[in-house]
Length: 372
Image (cartoon, rainbow, N blue to C red; front, side):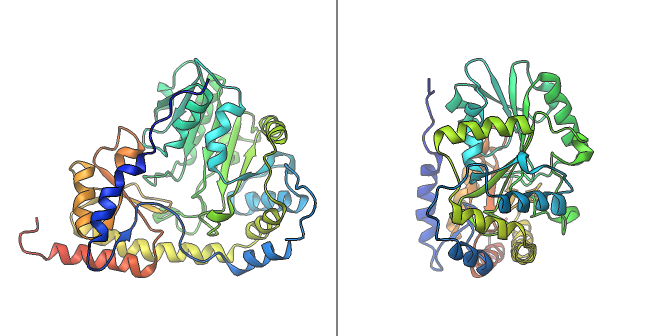
C-alpha cells in the first residue's frame, strides 16, 4: 500500500523567489540545477535523423546504444562491463524513484540513503512501502537493509567518494545481503583534485574486482550533454539485477523512444562536447565561489557536480532571505535532510551573465556600510 507522500517542498521557496524578483536587476535563479546551455548540435542532428521510428523501440536498448555505453564505461570510467548488463532508462530519476519497488521491497525493509541527499531516495522507499534511513557510515547500516543508495558526486553537497570509501560501502552491503546502487550522474563534473577526469565509479575494478553481483550504477546525460529535456539515463551493473529490471520494464511498457536511443549513442561516443560543457561550468564556478566566500559564506564539499554548498553559520532560511534581497535565489539545505539546517545550495546552471550578476551583487553588498 502506498504510504503518505510529503507535500512538494519547493512551494516553500516561492516567497523568496518573489522577493528576489523585486531586485532592480532581476532575479538570479540558482535554486534548481536545470541546464540552460544549448543541446549540442551533433546530438540534435542525431535525434532528427532517427525520426522515422515506425516500430516499437526495444526495452533493452539498440545494439548501437549498448555498445556506446559499454565503450563509454571503459573509456571514461575504467569499467569493463558486458552489453547485457547495461540498460537505457527514462532519465535517472525514474530509477531512483522506482528501484525499491522493482526489487520487491516492502514493509519492514530498509533503504539506506546519504545523510544529506536528494529527496527522491526517500520517496522511492515510500513508494515501495519501505523505510528510509539516513546514514553515511556503513557500520551503522541496520539489519533489514535491502537497498543502499550512494550518490557521488553528491547532490547537493558535491562530496566525492574515493575508491576506499566505495569499497567499504560495497563490502558492508554484501554483508547485509543488500543491493547497493550508486547515483553517479555528475561523474564528468569533478573539480579540484578531480578536474579533467571522471570521478570513481562503484563498478570500478578497484572497488568490486570483477564481481558486479548486487551492485548497480546510474548515470544521466542531462548534465554532461544538456539533455535534461530528453530524459536520457542508464543503469548498469549486476546482470541478474538488470535482468529483473528489464522484465519489470517490459511488462510496464517502459522504454526509451527509438530516436532518443540513437541520440544517446552519439552523445556517449563524443567526449569533445562534454569537455566544452565542463569548461563552462568551471568558469562559472571560479567566478561565483570566491564571491560567496568574500561575502562571508563558507563553501563546503563541492568537489564535483553543479552546485556550491554554502553556509553563513545561521539558519538556512535566514540566508535564503538575505540572498533574495540581493536578487539571488538559492535552494534551502533543509530540503536535503535534517543534517543541513544551515546550508544553501547554489547551482551553476545559470547563464554566464546571470552568474556574473550574482558575483557583482555579492561584491557590492560586501562593500555596503554596516555590512558584517
